[in-house]
View 1 (cartoon, rainbow, N blue to C red):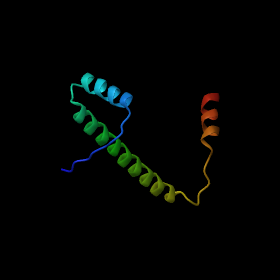
View 2 (view 1 turned 60 degrees about the vertical axis):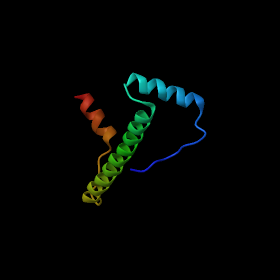
View 3 (view 1 turned 90 degrees about the horizontal axis):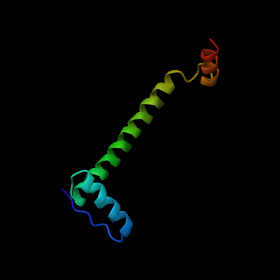
View 4 (view 1 turned 135 degrees about the horizontal axis):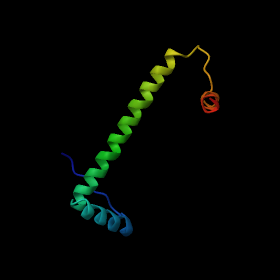
Length: 78
């Protein structure tokens, strides 16, 4: 595993992270590790979602699409 040093973090940020770590029964280092992992995981899922939706979009690229607002209004009017 690699080590990372982050300098000049605002004191307020550190205080908030310490409080969050305490509430989650983790050390400050553990909390930062957890948050970084969550952030990277969320971005990976978002990138995967965008790739899948782009692939789905190519399946209907040359077909006319109905505006979803119209479909919602129709459904509400029933």
